[in-house]
Amino acid sequence: MLTVFADVTPLGAIFLGLVPVGAIWFVLAFAGADAAYFDPRPLLARAARAEAVYPLLREFDNARHASREALREDVIYARLTLRETAITAAALLALLIPTSPEGATR
Image 1 (cartoon, one colour):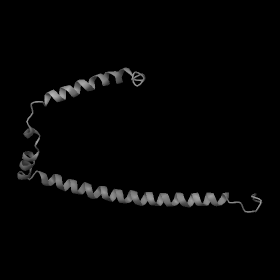
Image 2: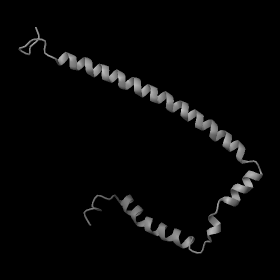
Image 3: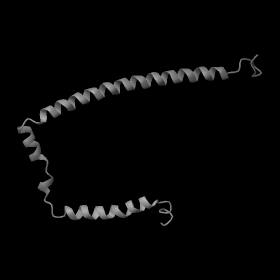
Image 4: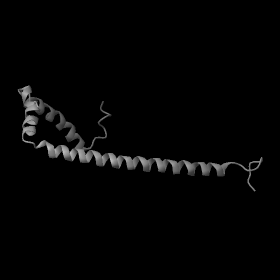
């Protein structure tokens, strides 16, 4: 077990010491919390009544279409690159094929 922590830097040791403290604080901070505190439905209902969600949904839809277009272009580029790489590899392998029965080119 000691060999696992042999290469830990001083900053890493401080981090390893603070992680359990932070986890304990997090548990204690929310120990008395009611489940209703974490229910997102009232917040979403208020946002829907205020129509504040629609611009967000519109931007989400625009981003979804833009990312889909970018992904489509990347897929096309990847296919063309793979095709060119395969053609180059086939040409290089063709150069390695011996042209005479002895195995030497003249």
